[in-house]
Image (tube, rainbow, N blue to C red; front, side):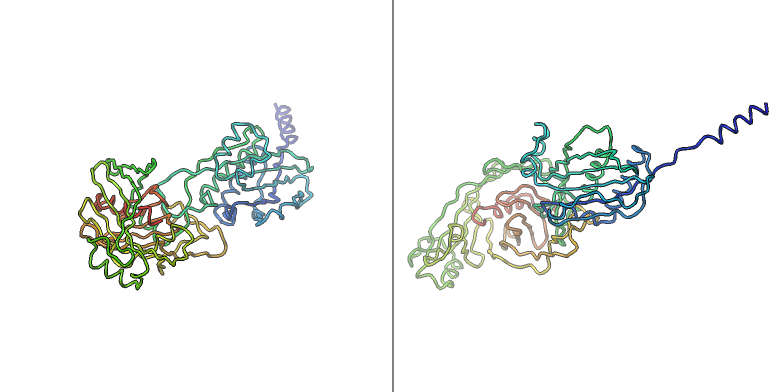
Length: 451
């Protein structure tokens, strides 16, 4: 019995548990040919998530212990910095492995030029807004390549409840960016991976601001379906159908002669106040429109001066010299539904859009920096309409080259609308607001003579 115990002890003494090798991240090189997306790598939470993911992947797939040293991230601002990509090892210790990571963002069209991917992958890339490359090269202590893979994430955006100004060169929020990098690393460090292109549907990303986001918590987002000049949408279970009709004009005052005998005293006063009654012609720009389901026909009339000595280089400029004062109209049949004034290029000293920040357009916790410098953009309204509609005061403010519009009723914000030439979606901020007036404000805001 004693001999058997001695034999067991001798066997245990001779048994050695293989030591785990350590792995060091030697470099994470990044560059975007589109914009500042890679600056998310400066965020502490993004770095932490990458470290945690790498630690788990390398331990699971290669039984490696991840070094807890800070990630050596380099963000290049031009492609010249990418030319020197020789692998450099921080230690010659043969028990230490080395990982090199590269993150690049491409324009999909440029990426497809000269690519030799299979047709299904090419179709995914062609419909994307952005391409992100995740490359990983893992080298053992003997400086032998163990794994060398590249995967590509084709990014396209999906509609969310968020609202705001969408960047034209940033397609991921901070959270989405971190998720894409983690998934890419997991696949690129999987020795059994056979997939090259990932089809990523990411939520829309928006610039930060100090005036829109605060209204989204209790609001509801409504999508508008546009077919030619018709807009349809559903609000509180009720379908709506609005239609824009012809764009025409009516003469008011031509060659010192009053043509429109129905002109109001205020309109005639404003014509004379221009000091150009003898030289200019004055017309109503007339936009026909309709609320199809309510069987209501509307006419929007915008009083405009046509100056024969104008230096306008286009018809758009020629017809944008709107008369001052509440001389512009919305008629329902022959009845006046609204009167309003038009002010162009008015600066709002209190509203800012932050080009150095991104959000998910829903909550402030999603705000992330994409630049070390601050870039606050002061809002200037393309136009501001103020007046009365159905006996109540209203204001419509269009900004960001007509991309966004705010609507107020009795000085209270009731809606935020996205869309330049036609409404694409809108937020109802005040659910108790009059739905009929909201429709009429949409028609006024999107009449084609204001673009």
